[in-house]
Image 1 (cartoon, rainbow, N blue to C red):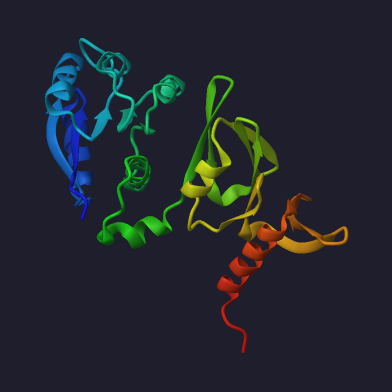
Image 2: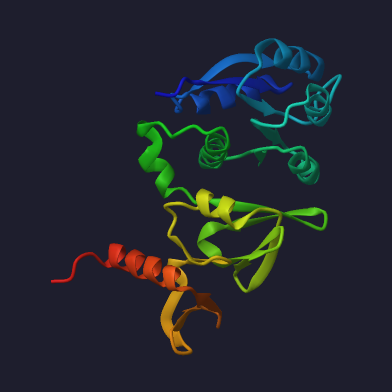
Amino acid sequence: MNSPLSTLIVDDETLARRLLRSHLRNHPDIAIVGESDNGEQALADIARLNPDLIFLDIQMPKLTGLEVLELSGRRSGVIFTTAYDEYALQAFERHAVDYLLKPYTRERLDEALNHARHLLGRSLPDALLSEATAQAQRVLIRDRGQVIVVPVADIDCIEAQDDYIAIHAAGRTHLKTQSLNEIEAWLAGKGFVRVHRSWLINLARLKAIERQGKDGHQARLGRDLCVPVSRSGHARLIDAIAAIEGPRP
């Protein structure tokens, strides 16, 4: 059984800290070990407590949240909570887990926590598992000074391209610095199938499996997309379809 995630709340607004603490009561694997109301105190508390997870405001007295993150040297377990959207790119460049814009919903907070658990190698408590399964998941992409949020349900397919992946979604293609193996692991259980060494497809977008040449196949998706299917990928695809359809009478 996993030990609780020690969590530090950093925000100069008393009401914001109180509201976040209230939301976190719904998560039995979160243990709040401290609260900081300014940047200097946050820096000291991070060094003293070394929490697994930090909820970090940006605009605070003495030091900003970005300055706290830079000075602390933290590279994991930080979720920003702020009313300002213009710092999102800087936050993700500093390895932030997520960026919550105030006022955020409980569902959006839960989504950020699930992402943090995944990155920290923690499993979801049984009490929250069914609720998390129903939540929408999102992929965050940095693109020319902005952060693009792509719902997983909108993704048609994902293609490996050297050091990047190309995410094809809603008629657009977004490049993200990540390996296909990494995003395949993150998407496990979300209806995606590896049909080729360079391609993942969203099974919900599959329209047909077509022959390509003598022994090859391709997957036809929505929006006139065709994806090559290898021999092993074809077997995985057939197994995935059979698992959804169930045994035939």
